[in-house]
Each structure stands twice: as structure tokens, then as C-alpha cells.
Length: 200
Image 1 (cartoon, rainbow, N blue to C red):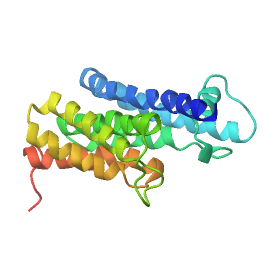
Image 2 (image 1 turned 120 degrees about the vertical axis):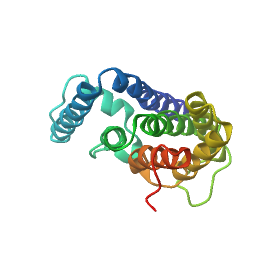
Image 3 (image 1 turned 120 degrees about the horizontal axis):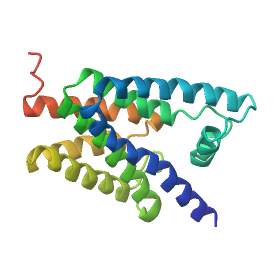
Image 4 (image 1 turned 90 degrees about the vertical axis):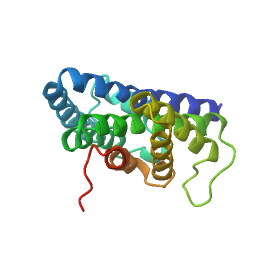
């Protein structure tokens, strides 16, 4: 029963993560309004979390946070949504549109699928990686390869991007992979495709 509840919690949590894959579409249509909304979302969420920790439940926001929070986040500020939005914001602000899109897709689909696959069918634990599984890594690799291929139409580039994302995602970075993945993967994509010029 505990395992089932844990899986349901992970599916709910990562469904929010996967929805961030829609952000590049909205950025392409309404760039600055989306940037402003994302900043507002971080500020409002942070205020709601501070209030929740002080014992003042905020309708809807606190319920969603408590439902999605992992065991390690109990009675703590749940940082995941903040790092998720910050990673997306930095990628959108500092990278050209296509690399930013790839970075955000890597975060949304790669990190999202890694957790879901790991929870649902993960059996082979990777040593010293905070409980991450080989199956989760392969889920991440597959999701990012498909997402990158859909944008770049280049199998070799997609392979490189999937490998880099998988290598970052498997590290025990906790919620800070939400920041590193979109920035590092997007930058790497820009460099290997020539969209971002090498600095030397």
C-alpha cells in the first residue's frame, strides 16, 4: 500500500514537471508575459510555502505542495517548484530560442521520465547515486533523444544531448538538477549545432 501511494505521489509530482514542456510553446507566442508570469509564480509560491511552514494553509497551493512533496521534504520548504521555474527562466533569458527549448524539454521530459520509470519499474540501483536506477536513466535517455530529434531532426545531435542529460540527471543533485539541466543541456546543444559560437 505504501509503495502504491509513493508511485501515485510521484506520478502527480512529475505530471507537473512534464507540463513544463509546454513552456517553450508559450514563450514563442508571448515571450515577456510568460517570463513575468513565471517570476510571479516563484514569488507567490515562495510566500505560500513560508505561510504553510508557519501553520497558515493557503487554499489549493498548500494542498498541491503537500500532495506532491517527497518524504525528505516533510516540514521543510519544498524547493522543487522554485528550482524548476528558475532553471526554465535562466534558460529562456540567456539562451537563444532553440537551445532554450531543448534545455527545457530535457528538464521536462528527461527528468520527468527518469523519476516515473525509476519508480514504476526501476530494479537496478546505481551505487552512490541516491537511489537512482538504471531503468530511470534509460527512461531519461529515451525521452530526451525523442524530444531532441523532434526539434533538431539530427540523430547524432539527439544522441549527444540524451547522453549529456542522462549524465547530469543521474547525479545526486536533489532539486538542483532542475537548474543545471536546462542551462547545461541547452548550452551544449547550442555549441554543437553552431547556434552559440564557441568562446575561443
